[in-house]
Length: 404
Image: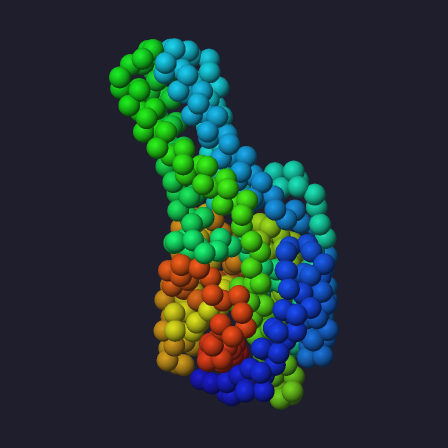
């Protein structure tokens, strides 16, 4: 199927050079920060050289809101448990009723924010300006399909140097949900039983609920100690790779026959994927003129364990058709590719699929990434050259399928 060469050596070099330039001039890529703006300007300047049309979209985000909400919920769970404990000893009804209501509220907020990416509560934090940039390369004839390749500009906050590595947030979230559920059921049973004081059964349930307190405390302090990674594997390399692909098309004077190719670099990805949502909402109608495909790049650490993601923990469904085309392209290139879904929260494709675009994400398997005890992909040298070459070739091959 391949009608184009794979990503050329010169453009693989360009990818690493651009990434190194960003790392030096914008080392701390927090959402809405000056460094993120500097990175955006670097990439915008490069995109303008190789695209027929470039645009920039600014919007406001609320960085850090998720961490603050998480800490408030941890404190709330401890308060609920203490109220329940007092009621078990004294047989009070009103405090346990209040605790039960707070328990339900905590679960609803957790689900809204961390499973469905809700943004309504983010206004508790000061807003900061962020932005998206998009470059378009038109096709030779009348466009029949548009493929938007997507990466993000800012870096995740990660927990470093702890056993279980970056699986800690998932472990703590699951333990908190289980603890919340056990506490809710215990309080409900206590009320239905007539709020008996010093009942052995409810003292046992209270002791079981107390087992989860260390997880709430650990979650509170680990969230506070999260550090912003350099984002080499999750943002810098994917962004630089997409620009290098546009560069290769431009320098080879290559255009697809009927496929318009776009490079979208979004801001504030780790603030409820604010950039992706802002873009998808604004361009929902403008991009409905022809069939439009979104392929966001997730974290890239190795091409030996690639995966496509078209189902997430919020229940959002991506496009199985897009995933199948990427899988076919990977088979042509003899690359291993699996299909995965997130256990909690949303994926990079979700903002686009929620606006009824065909979309699925591509990146290194999350199962593979989660096995690392501490992240080692915060340095340019951590990303193998072969990985950039393989992912670049896979993207080009996928574009060929859409043009065929």
